[in-house]
Image 1: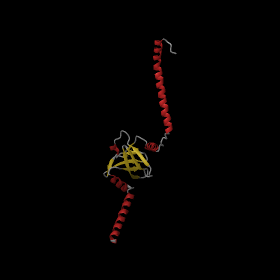
Image 2: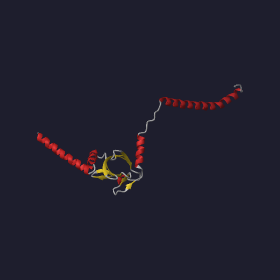
Image 3: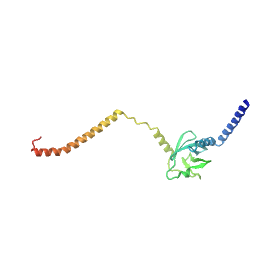
Image 4: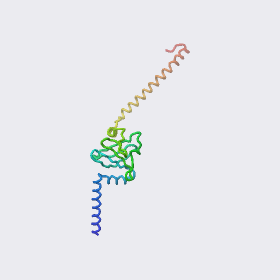
Length: 183
């Protein structure tokens, strides 16, 4: 029985070494591709062309927004600009949806490596980060109660003024019928 376990461990070791070697030689493509393949369409293969190298990441589309992590583990967001068809940017690579992004220019790349621009990805990412970390507005219940009482008293004051103005002609007509004896 020990002989079977030793063969299984040796074969697993050889497979693991070949997996790590191929993953290293393909700049992380194999591990990312397996992760995307296992998501069954939930993730997209993002090929990021950097200044010095090309690497692969798993990204996710939320509508027209692509979210992925860069090589330094920083979260990035990119939006498909208006007027650009998603079919110009998203294509299939080895049966999986794939996009190509230029990290230096912050733009999408089409199949023929033309850049598609139309927005500033860094500014958009900063705005989304600021909105996500926006502090909650602290509402004091006492201030809300004072505000509601103030609005209600203003409405009552307006109602009383309206009724007083509408009663003035009625009082004048009563005065004239009685003979002016009411002061």
